[in-house]
Amino acid sequence: MKVGVIYESTRGRTKAMAEAICEGVTAADAECEVIDAKEFNGLADFCAFAIGSSTRMKRVLPMVKRILSELTDLKGIPAASYGSYGWSGEAPDEIANRLIELNAEIVIDQPIKAKDYPGESVLEECRNLGTLLAGKCS
Ligand SMILES: Cc1cc2nc3c(=O)[nH]c(=O)nc-3n(C[C@H](O)[C@H](O)[C@H](O)COP(=O)(O)O)c2cc1C
Image 1 (cartoon, helix red, strand yellow):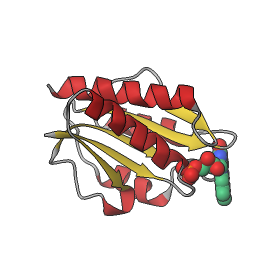
Image 2 (cartoon, helix red, strand yellow):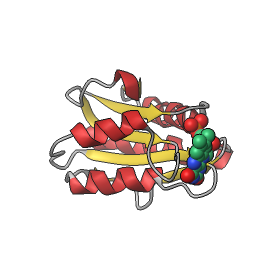
Image 3 (spheres, rainbow, N blue to C red):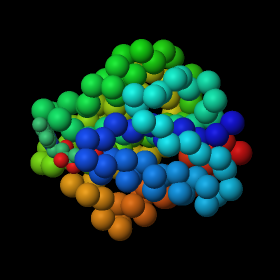
Image 4 (cartoon, protein in one colour):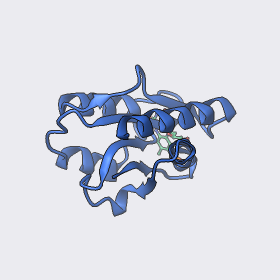
């Protein structure tokens, strides 16, 4: 079992957050997979996961929207959301609300948001999230 970090990103900013989350997972000696949302193939391999999207027109991007609509009951699986944004940043909240609706165990109080390209402090938050998710798998 490993931690899955799913992302959809237009300019690589949310992807950079995904990679930092996985760095935190591997630093905690757990396995991690970064998954482009268009290649997402279900949660069967994962003991915990994070899902991220940047915000477009106040919503999540289309592949993440599809994943969120297709997921079924998450039965307490540890999860979190994240994403880069430009000015309003609704997408990570939209994801978190859906995860709560599906009974995931949300492991952080607030989704991680990066305005534009994630700076070092946000990348550190992402790594910490990865370590937290790894801890939920052991
Ligand atoms: C067409 C378009 C619409 C956008 N709409 C929003 C928006 O409603 N709210 C917001 O916070 N940012 C918005 N943005 C900004 C992106 O979320 C921002 O550039 C983000 O850093 C992109 O991250 P990514 O590289 O992971 O896709 C929009 C950008 C584009 C190109």
